[in-house]
Image (cartoon, rainbow, N blue to C red; front, side, top):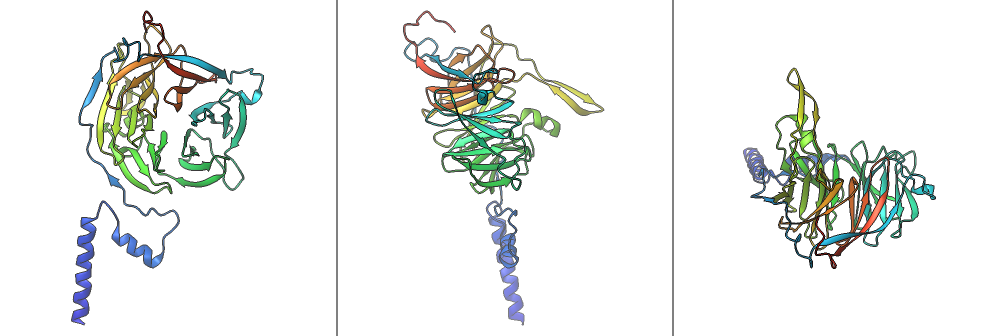
Length: 381
């Protein structure tokens, strides 16, 4: 009997020691319990590793003049290919209502996510209607007001208002879905199928999931202490580079953070907008934040196949409208492509082919080629 008790105590000490050493990798006692009693389908099976390093190792603040601005061989211009979807269009199927996100594939097709109708509209590379992809397929799988769309690895990734991530194949058939515990503001997927979400909630802004929806990593700690401010200063957009680096563009203030796939900060960068930034006005009542008024500057970010970072921003310069700021993967400011209109979403076909979407009431989708300057030495942006 004494030997049995000694064996049990030895095993208990072993498991406690092993759990302490592996606390960031696995929950051993939870695994033993699940092996004996089974595991529910909704139960998480991974222990989330939280990266606690706060800020990138250095931040690069670029000037207003990009490295390509005075180089005619590198400077870029935009050539319009098509404009489609304007209200009153001959094809009513392109009469978008509350478009809320945009994606594209490598063939030049554009996918417009409609917030109210719960469907994706596919547009051909020529700007014509191709098909609807309906997200509400039957009464057993309702899709509540989608607001985030990504297209990677020939699959659609959509987030609805219940913070559920739904994965569809290219024909539009649902593959899987999983519910998160976060308010998802944006989503990106790498080539290996790992899913990254941006959330203005909890103590971390970025979270990494497996393709099956198991959270395995939380990184990019919140910089604000007050919970009410998380929802304001954690908003933005995320994108994945060809090397699976994660880029996070803050909506306000204008900063871009770059992380490794395992959540380690690599770099922070931005550029001088050469305009006076109005700090946000925070209204409090009895010490509690009731509203925050701010200027929004960063609307979308995408990483081209040649590692060029494209950040869509709002500008109040003399040109008006918006601009796409181009950076190298090392954070060096290259140039801006100034736009005459106020776009809100950006999608890439390839490094020289982009699609932009205007919000209400215009609701148009526009495609551009990015070309080198030709005989344009006297053109000034």
